[in-house]
Image 1 (cartoon, one colour):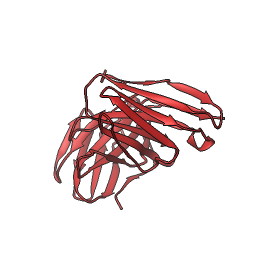
Image 2 (cartoon, chains in turn yellow, purple; image 1 turned 60 degrees about the vertical axis):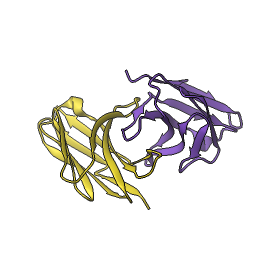
Image 3 (cartoon, rainbow over the protein chains, first blue to last red; image 1 turned 30 degrees about the vertical axis):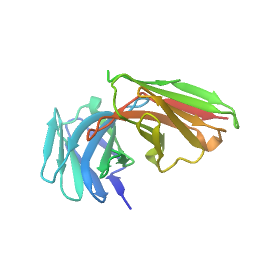
Image 4 (cartoon, rainbow over the protein chains, first blue to last red; image 1 turned 90 degrees about the horizontal axis):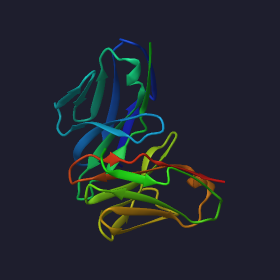
Length: 111
Length: 111
């Protein structure tokens, strides 16, 4: 069964305290892995797409990496405005372009 | 913004009544999706569409139907609302092999 698991469920950091979020997956035929950020009361906002093991993408204080079994979202020197829920999703093979989502990591960055 | 709007943003309805949620896009994307988001379950796919009049079921489709008579509109109907359908509903659009762009969501409460 195709599955996406994110850990931890919640993470509390002090401003400037770097950490990583994990997304592990078991799917048949990965076409891509996506990271989204979701603020309360809003829809998820696209951050990154990774397509192959070894690939890395960066945006400001965020860096996403991909292996054959998992992806990490590294947050370097976070600020309070980085507080949000971070969602991971994998795209399956086939023509439907469907995504399977993990349940997310709720990140709180305290000043 | 990405050119996807959902309506209404909030709705309270009574058990047993029909409810229709609307998703409208201006991007001319082929794929459209309806998800529901619940605590502890993340985003779960209800139905999706890969073209006008071409739709298929997702993992939680019971009690829901959809229609897509035009490229830009994707309607989600709850035939007879139940309390278990209280949720936040998100519409998403995508082009082939790209990640999703989400709407702002509809918060539905069934009383």
